[in-house]
Each structure stands twice: as structure tokens, then as C-alpha cells.
Image (cartoon, rainbow, N blue to C red; front, side, top):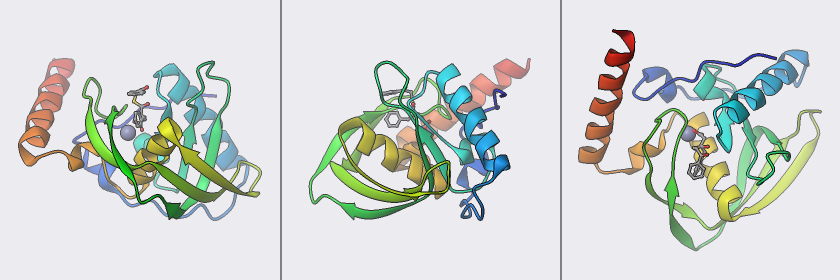
Length: 169
Ligand code: K1U
Ligand code: ZN
């Protein structure tokens, strides 16, 4: 297993639209293991392949308190969304230190493949629902700051670029 570098906003690679996984094979299972290790190490509750510069439709999630209940979604498809939406506080491992409110569906149903390539259907609400929507956005090349006002987004972009410059000095 290996820790993978996480792309940081405003890296343009974060806007790549991911392609479907064609075969759930050993390469994908090794990537899943690395992504889970990277997510747990970064203390995140989710990670999309896009964030580790792999542009295939794969996400890993663990919203459990004990951090012992990983969920793997390969080629996820949204099959149902609730009428009700809610403003939720979100963070992102690709935008460290920034938290803001994003309007999301209260509940979603998603179909996907698991790490064995078997079909599964997940009915999600609360934090799991929010996290699935956030991660599926990553696969479409969308970062949560794009829901914020242009002014806020611009401030965040400047802050991230400044932090990057200071890191490189
Ligand atoms: O995709 C990511 O960058 C992971 C991200 C997922 C996420 C967090 C919160 C709401 C929606 C999606 C994170 O794990 S950010 C760090 C974190 O653990 C966290 C931040 C805010 C609330 C709960 C957890
Ligand atoms: Zn994110």
C-alpha cells in the first residue's frame, strides 16, 4: 500500500471528467487500497480518484466514527434524489483549511459496483448522502468551492496559491 499525493485546488487537473472503470481487476483493487490508506491518513471521510490524479470513476468513503466501515463505489450512478435539500458545511482534502455551506439533496440512491465488481445499491442520507454527492462531483471535475460566490472562490484561490508559493520557498 502507498500514500498517494492529493491534488490541491486550483490545480486544473481537478477539473478532468473521469471515465468509467472498464474492469475491476488487481490494478483497481491496488488503487482502492492506496486511496483508503490516503483518505484515513488525511483524516478525510471520502476521496475520489480524481483527487489522486487518476481519472476513472472510483470513490472511497468512510463516515463511521470508528473509521472501520469503508465503502467503495465504482462507476457510481445517481438513480434517485430527494425533493428536499439542505445547506451543509463541507470541507475538501483538495482545499485544505476551507469550510463552507453547500446546498445538497437530503437523500440519494446510488447504484455502483463494489471492489469485487458486484452491483450494489446504496440509499444514503445525512453525512453519507452529502459525502457521496461531494465525491461524485469530483468525478465530474467539480470542486465544492464552485458552488460558492465568485468573490469567495477567488479569495480561496489566492489563499491556496499563496500557501503553495510559501511551501515551495
Ligand atoms: O473529497 C474530499 O475532499 C473529502 C472530504 C469529504 C467531505 C467532507 C465534508 C462534507 C462533504 C464531503 C473530507 O473528508 S474533508 C475533511 C473532513 O473530514 C470533514 C470536513 C467537514 C465535515 C466532516 C468531515
Ligand atoms: Zn473534496
